Image (tube, rainbow, N blue to C red):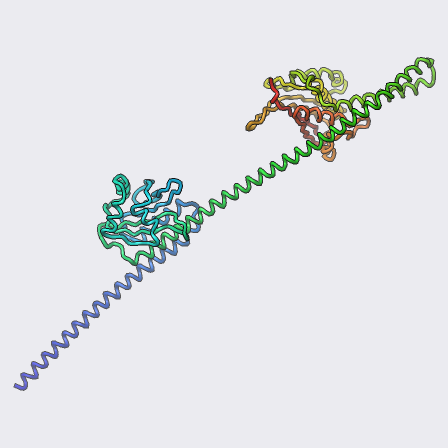
Length: 474
């Protein structure tokens, strides 16, 4: 009997040990499963972190918003496997709506109101996980046609869960990122929330930086344009001031010329008459006659200088008349034909038939053309080519059309140091010049609201371009 009791006790102990062993084994298996689960989660976490690091390195190199969006959509599929659809919306502030800019299931660009799932995501303070009735109620906020548009972007409808996150930088919101779950109600887990928020933050920061770059580039272009316009305006102002100064100098010289001419004319007339009377009383072979001739020639030269000085007067309105520029140039060339032949100068014309008749002072323009043509002849002492051409310049904006008259020679050219002084009164490099020809010409052209331009190269020749507006065209 004692032996039987001991045996039964032994059996009970074995059973207890077996129970304990089973419990230990079950606990070990549970620990092993938990360890495996933790390992899987750690692996998943490491994989997600690698994706985020790779994305963080790639985004700064993007050049446009569309590239950023496509990167976010692509990486979302890696970060959240099993997602049925991914949508990225951006705010259109002008229309106060959301625009679906990218989806992994559709290329449709649809507008979305600032409510529903996208609106909730935009206004949310942080990323959220929506499941069950909350998700259904949010989708029901959309109009039927809006739900149909949204349904067309998904393979599975209705979604059973959704991860949403706002795209924001500080207080500024750019859009929303939404991931839709499929048939499994708990496809997503709360631990997914930090990752979608991090993804949305990366997208928002990149988009904001690109927008800042775009604005900075636009500001830079505006600044460059403003500087260019300022420089152009300053150049025009300087030109206008120079022209105004030149006009003032010419006006002063004109007033002085008129005064001097008036004061000199009377004694000059008396002196020439006196010389004429003396000449009548001299014998033809008198030795004093040579000196008398010199005096008469020099007084004549003084009279011609005074006549030129008087030409600074502005033409009166009564002297303005219809003027054919091409005909006037032909007439002027006829006047110097003999001089051209003797100087072995070949004259050529290219006169545009498009040049209109204008209202101008014909005689004074003839004087301008004659002065410049004679100067061109003087620049070709050994002969050469003289080319006279006219053409119409293309008008810009509301500016009047302009006639360009070019008088070109193949002469000695004008040294650079002389060009700034060409139109200054009494400035001349000629031995017997008065320095009034080009000054008078510039004054006459300016009185016709025109200008004279000069291009010249030493030993190659010069081109004088006379620009006359046609705003008085009849």
